[in-house]
Image (tube, rainbow, N blue to C red; front, side):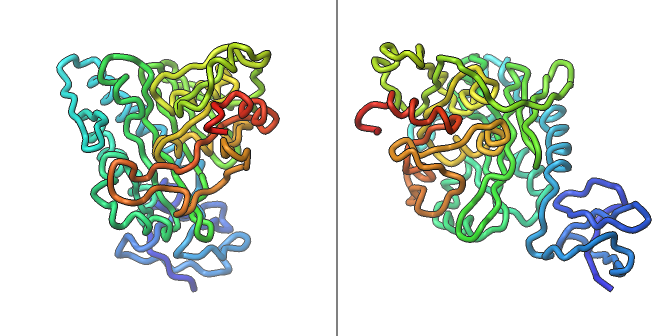
Length: 342
């Protein structure tokens, strides 16, 4: 017999759980180290093989996407939009000189609670609380799963009534001493859209209708390039046959949404971990990849040495400048970088 701690009945979506398929075509959703009751399951009752480690279960991205989508649409989006329309919202200045609103902090708290329900043993990194745990930053690379959250990317836009802002949770999985993108969700409530992925595809949800469609692979020949890292030389773009315009909405993840949707050819970016984390997995499912802007090297994971981890203004800054593009476009994009960045 195999003994599991359990939560809930068969066929019930359980936070932080894994599925045990049974031969009677039902399954138990079980979660690790959370409940006080135990379920003993005979090996003979289990359909197929089941040898996942209890200390490092594979998460079911489809179930996470379903659960989190509902939460974002029914809880987060209405809350954010009510605040967005409130002209009296307070705007504060953080220690690094950037601005923050009470909504940023409230959304991060909402997401933290929900995300840690989904995967209770995961670590959590949020923009608004990262400085509180700066002395333990490297511990995140020892966790099997890490949630990385930008509660509102584009806070200045949000605070001043400009619709280009994004609520962005991401899930990273440890692979050795690296963190690999597994899941990301990009909610643009003022634009009425949300992009996310599961293990197979990237998806686009229309908030007005509630309909969701599979996003095909990025095949845009757009001559727009987004730049939130001040890497693209506009003079080179103006003389280019491939590109025409450099756009910066002061919201990195808004650039990511538009790039994934084919509104732009590619994007150049520099920023902190939470500025990029949520775009990585959906972009990959849409046929885009992340590259080092200087070398053109493909980047598919992140380790301790990829970040500035000393406490202070640059905590969690990604050390290298990056490009999100199709593989066949990356060299062309790099030809338009300022010489100091290439």
